[in-house]
Image (cartoon, rainbow, N blue to C red; front, top):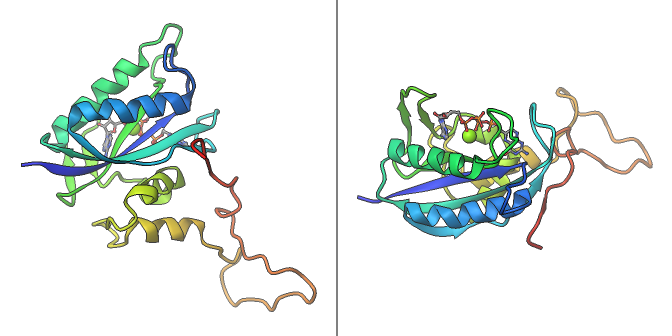
Length: 195
Ligand code: A4P
Ligand code: MG
């Protein structure tokens, strides 16, 4: 029986033959066709690095119909990461391509494994614009089984204007331009490589 998966792709390192991160991500989107049928591919987004990473990323998403069960798909994605990661001079642990399973048609999945196990939905995806922007590009109506919210809704929560301080709203300053953009909304606007 085939299942539907939402896969997130990310890269912030060059590949010796594919080249720049956005080209690595595009190649990754194409290679995923070996795992089933890719029914939707997002635009590729340039995103500011989050966390310990230094260089900005290229991020994308795709929808995959596959006969593979979640653990078999994860193993195949890890294999693909390793294939993309074979690059001389690269530090141990760095990968040219990161492939995560974000959602699947079966709802929730949790299984143990020797190298980290598997949790679907991906535990952090609802807080990550670099996942939600590409995902909203191809699957805005897909509902997260944990929060019950659609991807479009989760994305809007991260990007919608918010007051900086909680509590009673203060009256707008006379003559001042309204600006209710919160810290998240003030992040560098994401742009796509494809436009
Ligand atoms: N694992 C459990 N659940 C899943 C799942 N749903 N999908 C386990 C994939 N893997 C899952 O992941 C470590 C282990 O998590 C796997 O072996 C698997 O058993 P990993 O991809 O090997 O390691 P990682 O990349 O360090 O973890 P993770 O969580 O993917 O890293 P992050 O937190 O995603 O950090 N900034 C921008 N703008 N864009 C990015 O793409 N990526 C990172 C990577 C940091 N900052 C970024 C981006
Ligand atoms: Mg990962």
